[in-house]
Structure formats: structure tokens, C-alpha cells
Image 1 (cartoon, rainbow, N blue to C red):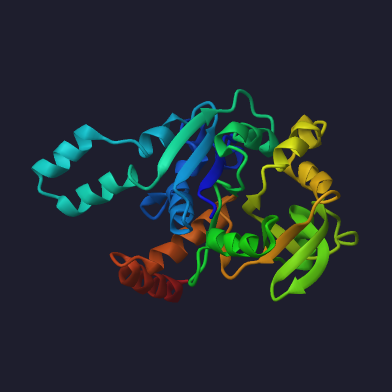
Image 2 (image 1 turned 45 degrees about the vertical axis):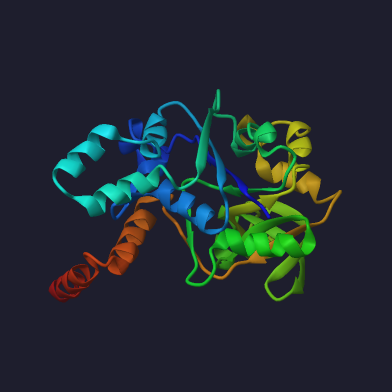
Length: 289
């Protein structure tokens, strides 16, 4: 059973400036909860108990979010706000969460390299800290773990995208092995529409065997002179089996302003406290357009 996860959260978040000048993009809220908390909750719901977060300069707020806050807890206790007190305390109890600092912004592959000794030569999950994926059935990371249990090899989450959008993503080249499971022969980073071998894009969730670290150590810097995870995956798939899973669920694109606003509305409509009021307001607002 996979119990360890790595959550890289070290990027600058330049597409959300100026807010990310002082606030990590992973801490931007969806309704009232930061994105990275949803990611951690997905990992925990998938059976993960030990999480290593790779953070960079200016990301101290992430550490503080998952730590205890005695003054806040005391204030909530005095006000007899026991429901919120429990909610706040539970954040620090979600999992055993550790932090390591990426010394310089050197790519996703470099961030993952920091986890080599933490995972202790065991298979592990990777969940990107700024991306939400949600399933109404089984958590997406758990879906990947289930495939790993069958094949004992690395598994990558896949999402079907419109063919005209493949040049925005890494995509799989491979063949369908069973229902929604593909055997990979290659991974192509942002291919042109004409060159794309499929429209199944890598969707920010992975299960890796520890051999991935050997490939990360032996690839030269790639795009933007950074250590690219896709380059390591391309090398790895030449030497051992790798799989892709077209997961049951949806990825919410919060990497741009429009996607972020859409995601807030979707999650807001599902919120027990504000969902109905938000829906009514939206209906009235649309009528006024």
C-alpha cells in the first residue's frame, strides 16, 4: 500500500500577480479553503499518511497553514465557536506533513528530486499543489493506486482534452490495455496538433516507483534550462513499463484567472452554507444581462 506522497509547491505563480507577490498561489482560496488543502485532503482520502511538500521562497504561509495556531484556537474557544475550532485543529492532523525548501526554481523534476530519501526506496504519489482534480466516486490518487496495485509500475493520471488544445499539455503515446488504462510508449511535452499522438493529457497526479529518481539525476536541463519531469518519464518508459489512467473525475483549471473564477463558482454552488444563495443570485444576475 502506498503511504507516502510528494507535493511540489515551489513555483512563482506569475499568472496570478500581483497577489502572488506575497501570497503563495497554492494558498489562494477556493471558496474558503486554500487549494493546497484540497490537494492534501485528496491524498489523505487515498490512504496517504506521510506527505513531503517541496516549497520555495515566499511559501512560509503553507507551513503555517498546516501547523497549530494556539492564539486562534484560544480565541475560538473563548467565543465558544466549537465547530470552527474543530475544523481548524483538524487541518494540522490531516497527515504527517514535512517541508523541504527547493534552493532555486529549477523545474518540477528538480523539486521531485528532493524527495529521494524521504520516500525511502518505496513507490510514492505526486500531487501538484496548485491543481484540483475531483471525482464523485473514488479520489483520483486512489484510482491511480488501484492501477499500481495491479501492474506494480508507475501510473500517470490522464485527462481527455480537445484536440486543438494538446499543445498546452504533456500527452501520452501508447495503446489501450483495458478499460481506461493505457500502456505508455512515450510521453510528449506540448506537441503540435499535427504531431500529437493522442489527446490524453497528463493531469497533475502520478504514482512513481523509486527508479524515477535515477532518471531525474541523469537527464540534462531541458526547456527553460530546468529539470523537466517529462524528460525523465520519456527516458524511464524506454526501460520499464509505465501506464496511464483516464481517471473518473474532472480536473479544475485554476492556473489562470478565468479558470480560477469558474472553479470558485462551481465549488461555491456545492457549498452547504452559500450554495443556494449563490445559485439564486446567479439566476437573477443572468436575467439582468
